[in-house]
Picture 1 (cartoon, protein in one colour):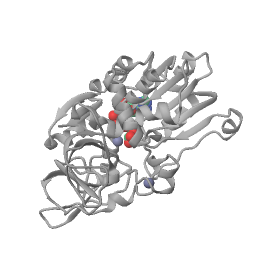
Picture 2 (cartoon, helix red, strand yellow):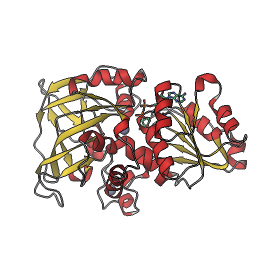
Picture 3 (tube, helix red, strand yellow):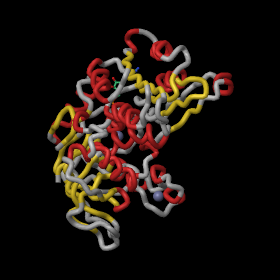
Length: 358
Ligand code: APR
Ligand code: ZN
Ligand code: ZN
């Protein structure tokens, strides 16, 4: 099998032939149909999330089951699945509180050896997936069987960006109809937040991004107002659009402490700021202490859109199939595995919403 492997900080991924390790009794082997290139993979390359190399990257993908281990329940060869970058084991404390996005197996599966490289070294996989590959072996808890005729490139994006973004709006924030919303950062995930806000019936949706392509796409996805941080302080611009009050819900979808503080500043008194982006592991966020008390704002963390993947993947498919959620327009480029390093360059250059390896 071929895979794109993280071999060291700020180095290009190494695209190599590797030998798959034999699957365990509760594993499934999946032929990968498509894999999105998400910013979190880039954060690993930059060392913002310390991950020991070698590791096959990619955590947003879909495919078809080729083989199941003897202890696998409810999945069979030929099933169409979407990979879930947090497993949903179904039996841990969190899974039993309907918080499978916090499943206690989250880190464990990323440590499992999955491929042997030509030099004899053993590679694990990012989040227990490693979708930047033509075949992946994963625990059964890391895939969700879905029923759909949608193209792979759309199902792949459900694996991270769509679920994270739409879930942030619907599950984490629970946006109510008529609300005002600001979204800071309109990449793949931010566009999905905008669409989630639209689906929730938000009144005003303010998209904040310095890149014109992102703002234009945001408008197509449902943004009613566009803010360019290059034209002045984002918080002041959002306040000016909301009678000086700020918005009911502000989403940070980049992963920078300064924009987390901006999201907090954009939320109105009594409003809600949601941290959707993944800040680097060693970062700190400083907020004004008095306001934290007096303005009674809510600051919510949001991992994987607070999604319950076994419920939400199929729900999102329903929204796409009925034309309420437009994932097709989020795919800017279809690429081969060999082009993955260029996809990261395009991401950093602001040229794409999502590149998808097909
Ligand atoms: N203000 C507003 N937008 C900004 C700013 C800023 N100061 N700086 C960067 N951006 C925009 C970029 O122009 C880009 O459109 O943020 C967007 C980030 O998008 P992507 O790089 O496509 O990232 P995405 O894959 O959407 O992920 C966003 O969510 O899952 C996490 O780890 C992921 O933290 C990352 C976040
Ligand atoms: Zn992601
Ligand atoms: Zn669990």
